[in-house]
Image 1: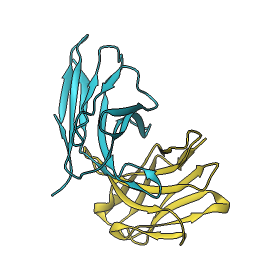
Image 2 (image 1 turned 180 degrees about the vertical axis):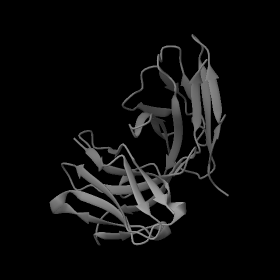
Image 3 (image 1 turned 45 degrees about the vertical axis):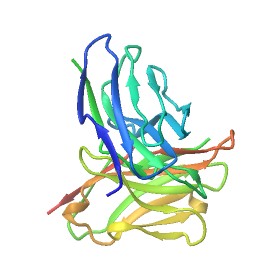
Amino acid sequence: DGGITQSPKYLFRKEGQNVTLSCEQNLNHDAMYWYRQDPGQGLRLIYYSQIVNDFQKGDIAEGYSVSREKKESFPLTVTSAQKNPTAFYLCASGLLWTGGYQPQHFGDGTRLSIL
Amino acid sequence: AQSVTQLGSHVSVSEGALVLLRCNYSSSVPPYLFWYVQYPNQGLQLLLKYTTGATLVKGINGFEAEFKKSETSFHLTKPSAHMSDAAEYFCAVSDRGNTGGFKTIFGAGTRLFVKA
């Protein structure tokens, strides 16, 4: 079955450490997204990419970085500059349709905590 | 600028009762509207979406939503709640922003509790 795979499911970060969250999709979707979810705040867009080797900042990109070297993969690095990284991170993908690019399929998320 | 307001962070209904989850939006252009469902420790799943045409949209799991332009609302309903409907529900709006590209904004979510 096609879908989005996020790994790991749980991740712990030490102070000053960078960590990378993996996101792989086999849906052949052009667009991929990273969202951060905090209780009571809904989803906030971190980065998105509509084509390989190109990506755009979302609303809360500070302290995060991404790459899009392959259509299937869109890893997110949470850098030490992100002072409050504890959250649930969701990766999504989507095809171009009438409404432009819009997240259509989501992975099961990675829960990141500070040690 | 777009925004989405979900009225009530928590809603509790009895099994078999009507489910009504409220969503109001603001958008300067005709919007596309969505409802998603999220089960614990999982990603979001698209329930239904409104693009153009018929204002009553039917989705999966017996849910439907009605786009009311005059009220800027897109409330989600289900005639009879089931225990398996207990989850968090997110309303979202997407429109062509100032830069010409589409942007999707999510509401803060409403957690639905279903009592036996």
